[in-house]
Image (cartoon, rainbow, N blue to C red; front, side, top):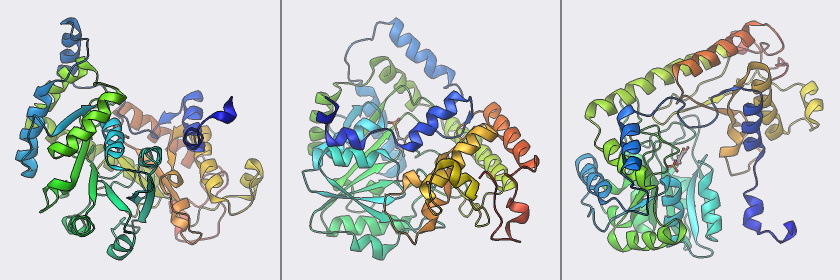
Length: 429
Ligand SMILES: Cc1ncc(COP(=O)(O)O)c(C=O)c1O
């Protein structure tokens, strides 16, 4: 009956990139691929979840206290006036909040603008709702919003703009000026904005997260989605939320109830403990991640990557292969693809990183959706996640340095030679 499966399920089949994840697991690679923390969640959160289970809070439930705290936080941090009773939907992570939001507003043929590169799941949700994702490229090296390209992407069928800031995979935090451009366009074209703010508390240096909903005229048309996952290192707890004006939140709630009914009860209870963490918690979160970011940046630079953009937020470095790193004929024979098939080659680059260095990362190509031959930067980025414990980061550093120092085929074209040659072969990378 396989031939009777839906087109949507075929489009959601595991990509080559997801298969790399399995390879990494099989060979026991140090995992800098996936964006989940591998260190423990805060002890008080774990205790709160365990206590909720012990207290038999095991049935369907809506924990109103979460909405009360979130409403206070939105007022304090973003000046938003939100009603905790009507304006929130507690969901199974940002992922379900986003899906329910899309199902609540998208009809067949509606266009949804998404910045490119983008976190992978938006596209599937939009397509499942029979909407059309329309990608707006961000300009490298700083992944800047190009006002002209953005405004030209609107049509009479544009229903919503998706904004993820701080951004996966680039680490960009959208500036106030960029947000104003987005806000003005949404109002002029009478569109929704759906924000993904899961990295809201993870910003670096002088960069600050501004919620699009806080800009004049935006709250009435913005659906904020976020979750506990990244801030509290509990991606498996599946607690997230959508926040929107009452009538929109009600539509999202109706979908959410049909999809999952409610988020996991013990973890909703523990969310109350998480969301009332002291200011110190958020300060040390940033500081700890800043140290990890700088460590991985240095490691990648030493290995020979070109870092043209220092992450301003989130937990990723989107590193670029130096121009001098060419893929060998040998490699192309190995993978059985012709010269110039950069997608395969980049996948092979990461396959080799997994096999030879024992370190897993994600080929950047999977985050880009527009296909232009001229845009070689699509094929030259690799995403490394640094939301990892000291042991993991140290193990990755040891393995990558060992490989770089081995003077094997990998080293040719490394940073030490980067500026001297543009045509050197890079062995197995
Ligand atoms: C940008 C972004 N949004 C959402 C998610 C998933 O969030 P949740 O675990 O709350 O579903 C991720 C996870 O990597 C992400 O990077």
